Image 1: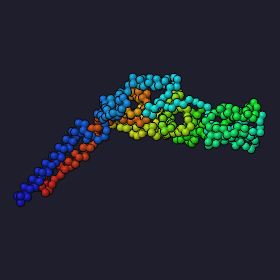
Image 2 (image 1 turned 120 degrees about the vertical axis):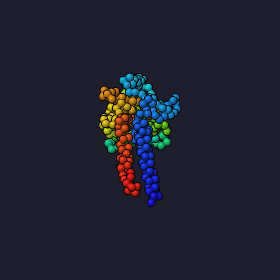
Image 3 (image 1 turned 90 degrees about the vertical axis):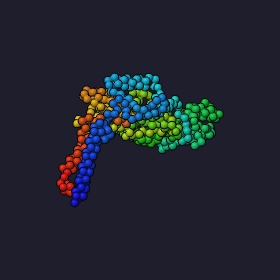
Image 4 (image 1 turned 135 degrees about the vertical axis):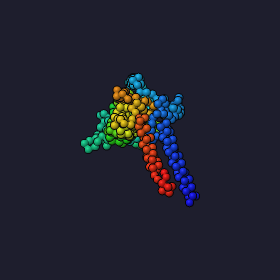
Length: 405
């Protein structure tokens, strides 16, 4: 009997020791959490007050390397510098139509305008004055296209008294001179005119977010990018104006039509060539992400790439007044392979005037940090169930041990 009592006493002592160890572990965990350990649930920007806490991609020279990025405060001076830089770009775009660069630094292709040159499939109409016998009239039942002369696949036409003539690659003026020279042996003082009645040999392709995607024939009117898009029914509401893709001879450029429409950058209105492909993507990639201590975190699609920090915070329901620390609002950006971090101190409401003047870019991440008291409450709320369990355990009496706790 005494042996059983001794065993019970030893077992009770071991249970008390285990409870003491468990209590000590919980207290140690709480102390570590309060000290800033990773045991604190949720995210916080406390480690990135001066610079990023993790290396980010930055551009040094022509090479991208990982490095810690310095946090730039959003101040009135920063807003003024950004405004002056935008004004400088606007003036450069209007002065002399300089060629802009897009998509990895490649310059947009520049092409001098040339008269339309005939190709296989085009239909021309040759009119010889005072010789109706060799000029086929259109009549009331035949269109000019039906009665015209088709340029064959080998680029030739046949015309009376001139024979087979190679016209592919020629302008109408050149074709007129060749025909007049050949017919001068038969007709004295030849007077003729050459007109194109159907443009079918050259075309460009417009696809994506336009009203009527498909092929657009090139005629004797300058076919620029804006002209082709307008013929295709113009851009839709979902189009990304600043990210139009132009593909030519296996190379692709990004064209900023928004800079053309709003800043007068005429270098973006590229003169097209036969076979060009214009793709207008949608604007679903033009999102900003508002995360952290806001009422409605999530992603928001920008309208024509126009959004300010104040608009993004407003769309997210503004900061959570019970858990956020408005003194630490971050904007994280990666543009052209380089990263930037910005910080706004929005404790005072008038600081939101700076936020209203701070433009966001697609894929920017806005993060509102958590308040210190909210972090403490999260620690307490996670420790409280364990402490209650320990309290309940300590008040339990064990009959096997003679009613001792």
